[in-house]
Amino acid sequence: MRLRNSEFRLIGRWPVRLSHANGRSLDAERGLIMVPSCRTHDESAAIALTFVRVPARHDHGLAPLVVLAGGPGASAIGAFETGFFEHVERFSEICDVVTYDQRGANSALPNLSNPAPPHYELDDVLTRDTFLDAQRASVHQLATYWRERGVDPNDYNTIESAHDVNDLRRALDVPKINLHGASYGSHLGLTVLKQYGEHVERAILCIVEGLDDTHKLPANTDRHFRHLGELARTDRNLKGEFPDLVSEIAEVLDAFERNPRMIKFANVDARTHVGKFGLQLVLGNVLGSIRAIRDLPAFIRECHATPKLPVKRH
Image (cartoon, rainbow, N blue to C red; front, side, top):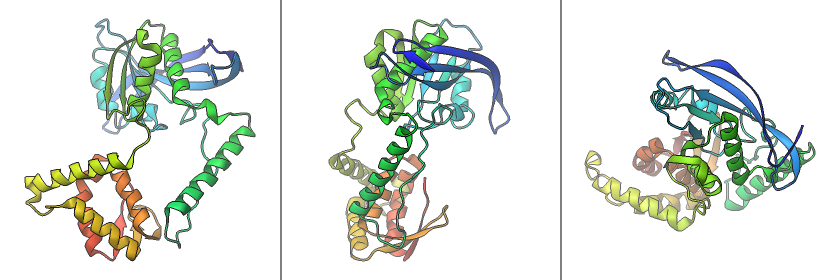
């Protein structure tokens, strides 16, 4: 199917029940819309997007709340039955709560899954150069694979996703929506506000990633670690055990650069030697997880003491 750049198609809606592991459930409807893959062309191949709507239990006359997943690529619909379920329960007391799986991910068709994920030689110490080589090879194979199947990876971008959100609004047949987004979801939310602000009533944005803030500069990362160091120094629960966490991190990185260490991933059956760059990757990912941030001081202290260090993938 091909669509003109201003078209969308609502294929249908059907009743579903969202069930959480806690035993509670919510009545909802699932729907499917078709949207253009590239609106800068007069017409383009259609993309199928699945959405879920939990109707308001009490009519307060509020616009639907559209929840934008982070990632990008996180399962929005799946989150409605897992980590976001209780929020959906609360919000649906006063308004419809809606989400959809973003183009290229999860239930969207096509789903741009990667047939060639990056390959790393676990017997070698990972360096910046070998890391980039593996990433570039994977990206090249991914782009080639999908272009051979008539899909242009350049169509999968935030601006097109913002247009998708507006087409979802049109499919819901409402003049305005409210937005909720965290991390990349906030980035997409800001783009929707920029493109379609007249159709947005309110927005709840957290862990905000601004429109020009996607690239994480090293100086910003260093500032975050200095802030965490100050928190560790003054936290009464740590009882003064970490007077200078930043210096301790620097000492550990220097030690890993001189003598790479064997790392066993605690929840993956794999071991590899890790040097400074590999540890920097681990520490950089810490900033994306509240749980990992809480564990950071103990992790750094363990790096000092343990020859074979178990590392959990959060």
